[in-house]
Image (cartoon, rainbow, N blue to C red; front, side, top):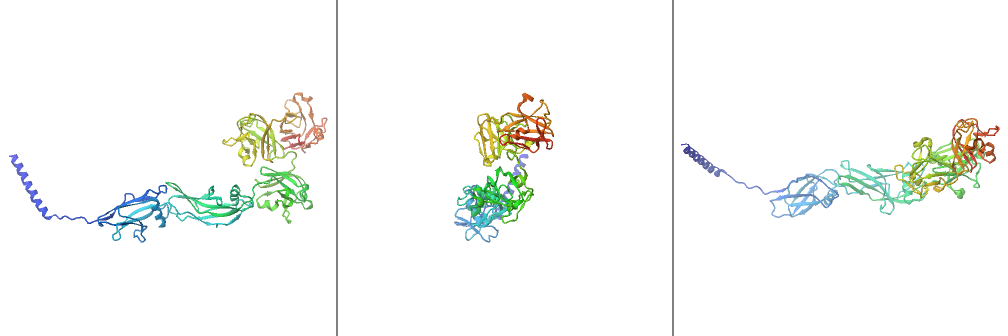
Length: 610
């Protein structure tokens, strides 16, 4: 019975479906789609044009055309959706179109699209009779137009002056037609210079900025000119251009402006090796050239003893070339004043025809120093004996065997003549440096290899730049003891055979005037030989008598030298000493008690305290 019911159900279902199908067939209507002309929307709508791959496709678009059996398609672009001024990108008879990075960038550039800014670009296809739909790209192009220098003008001339080297002499300005405030990459600019006519083969950067101008000072431009074939006082042409540097994700993009040519006349920065003082105020010179007072250059300072007087006008001037006499370049009071020098109160402007110096102090012998780095002109007591910037230099470093890298026993190289330091030194193949002040130890001013090399010194071949952290000297010769000479006048550093510097290795001081010694032999004070015929060292003095001895082992039997001995030998003796007029006619110290550097120079026959 269940089987019959089941079959009956299947039959009824089949009849229902059959009857329904007949009804559907009578009501169904089939419609065909209309033909399409559609520009497909690309999967990527942002285009960054990469200058590094100019021949790569910038974009590829395709379309479906069911309207035209055959057609020539014109691909159009516009920067506005209304296609107010459509731009043709090209034509094709295919259903797709590509354009290279370089070609698309050129089109955008011609449309005045600014670089490195996301710009809306609309595209469509035009058959001449039918237009496709429009698609949108956000495009960022790269810069191709170069900066344009707006000031100064080519052929402008600039005469430089050392009166104020930091004063601006020229401002270079430019425009960059591609870059706006909406640019999304960092753009900086370099001012490049080169010798005229070299097509910037050896371009040198005079500065970098993100602004549209760069200032050039007298000093900056002068240094460049002199370093590149310029001659002081002579006009020379240089080419200048602006290089734009865009920091893009693809790398740095460079653009250079057209060059301009400027005439530059530099000034002289080389210091003459001597100044010559001529004038009534310089007693030993007068207004003539028979005996000008010579002030030698040591480093950046001219200095020397000079007899000055306010009598007979008291005026004088500095000249640079003795052989030219009155034709020599000269420096008067305003010359230094205009350059910011602090000038000793004993001098003022003579306000005569040449604005000479006028000495207004007490007539006498002075030590004058013109320091071009500190920009000072100073007077002090006349210096007796050798004259150097420092009483001695100290050598510290592993290359100086007796010193090492410490301050227990630095090697002293003494001033033995005007601008000359000399002394024996035991050297090995290692590094060292010169220092000026032992008391300051590592805080002392120091002088390494580049200091002397850059100042134009001729340096002995046994030395080289250690190329370490401090660019010390390195001794590369045969280890041993040498006679080292540093000549600040002739700018030389030389090594020679060890010299027997003095008659004795040291002199010994004994007496109440030297409290560390007293009148006994337990602790006589040694004054070592430190240079050719020079004994020098630190001594503490009190107001009492003392004497020099030659041999400690002989004690009171040692040969000794009293005040009359040196006086009879023609020595100039420091005013802090006098004849004690006691039984041995010892020295008597009459100055302010304290520690001094005592120097006995047996060559120049001087005894000095500093």
